[in-house]
Length: 599
Image (cartoon, rainbow, N blue to C red):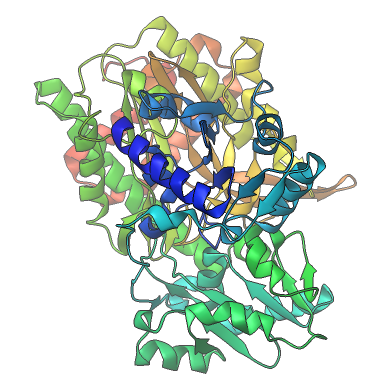
């Protein structure tokens, strides 16, 4: 890998020299600013060998650095080993930002090259502003992918309709709501780049991105005409007929830029700068009306009654598949049958795929045994695949895409008799999980105001974790969805009834073990009184936590009652769909934690 990266970086430096570029910034992005990318846009991965979903590469004539966040510190360290690329641990006080680093390492008059299609409006503007102060220019037309000679083709999946029986609302109704919000913002039209927003708005799905059922496209909406910009190979007569019935026409994907540039000077077009590339935004040439949040994103995040009914049914099927999966994993450990991390992922997929409405995994399964559990977004490969043994901890983070909902769950289980340290660490994490699950909070609360609730017990013991505590989850869409999140840094998006968010505190000891406990929760109305409206969370995920890993002496009576109540619900909801042996297995693992009976 190091040899390949050296060759590829040398080719990039040759292109930079020919184009008069002193430093190149290669973000992990596509023109739609997606979190997960189709292979066609995985240039940073191809150049560096680092496979994480977040992280930007910066290359100069004699240096190469990769910035990534805490989820990938351990993974990046291992994948960059032996290469010239220096890991920059983004988010730490000691790590300079990319702009600051460039100002320090480049002389006045230098030129930084970046593809303006791959940076959102505010980030490109901030980079230009910061570098300009140091006398450094930014060339936003630089295309470093020219060195990628065997680059994969553009995604070519076929688009299909997500039936309104699952979506709960027609595309034409959603378009009407989006245009009403657009008018309220003072614009006559809206341009949407974000793939998940387009898929949700039009009730369409596709397989252009691994595990995320979106179609590579742009969408323009106005009272006069609605246009989906998409490659013609992705459509057929039935889809075109469906779109026409919903009031949507079709143009070629590559025609979007020219269309924007041709709009009348008096046009006013709403865009979400954080989800729109700098280059596409520039084509509006003063006709853009910027908003902090796309109305499509805000509407999409609040699930309707049909969607909520669907996700509850999907959670039952998912829970049944998990019971069967973990039974098989435990049997293999107990009988001495060899089982690896990759086998765990295959077992989960096998049982989930037997369920009604299953379409795909919602992300690549994270099955981290022992030290691998401390790698937050670990995904086993042939080179790293560990064999499980009857001791230590196994962290399994997995999920599925069903037509009626998206699931995401993490469980940490003991493969043998847990140690006192493992039980203490696990219990501290679970105390935070329970605290957040049972929290009541007022209207207009942001996730940052709740985040410390899940961390408090770890903090009291001088421990913490660096990732967020909760992310939004789509409906048969992205497993990570905005605008809401629960994390330490401020995100100005309130939690609203109908939003689905994860609850996933964790603890990671490098080279020892990782612990994460994740359920999906639904924000609901709790009460209204003289102090205002209050909200609470309803836990949606249905699968037991490993009772062997709790230190009961560390739990309060309220925490024990929550755990017992949750496990009673799990058994009641799942047991009707299990055979006698499966029910017996689940009954044992959902008994009261105070029963103190052997497994």
